[in-house]
Amino acid sequence: MIDPAPSSVQILLIVFLASLIRSTFGFGEALIAVPLLALFLPVSVAAPLAVLLSVTIAAIVVVQDWHKIHLRSAGWLLAPTFLGIPLGVLLLASTHQQLAKAVLAIILIAFSGYFLIGRKPPQLHNDTRAWMLPCGFLAGLLGGAYGMNGPPLVIYGAMRRWPPQHFRATLQGYFLPAGLMTLVGYRMHGLWTPSVTHAYIISAPSLLPAIFFGRWLNHRLHGDSFLKYVYAGLICIGLVLLAQAFRS
Image (tube, one colour):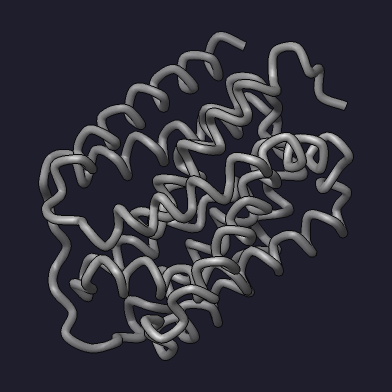
């Protein structure tokens, strides 16, 4: 079990912040939760915990805003994800913690830096399978390994220029079945442990207020200045994790 002394308060605060970001923007909780939780917990606990949180948030948002989901996009992104998730789970089950932290840090820095410097991907006016299939596969791979499906999906959503409300809802339509499949993989490989369940129970009280407050913020989103601060903070977290990985 997790030592309650250093973890209970940190888990509640981290999960509240991560869930608020996820409910506000439709993604990003794993980009915050996994790196911060990895400062206190093994990645093999932090990643499954992030997926449990993802499934919970997605289920609530889908019930709230199901009519705003682009079902076609979510379906085509899901198909290759089911191939990527098992490979990601195997990666998590077989890698050393130091290597996992290093890979996670590099992904975090690269993803955050891309958006922080203001670059935008090309605009897609219609669903394009040439983009959806690789984005879905990479999302499954990252989701299975680190509970981080978001980056490839966010890039695709940015190229489609979805409005904030549809962006948030469509990603949840993807995250719900993808997260459930990832959890099945974790269970089959023994990665859903009592420590993961214990951490989830600790974090549960902070989920609902974060989800509903995030939905309120989402409907008032204008511009991306706040996201720039978020990405800057994520780069700092990634640098800390990278330093930890090389120091271990």
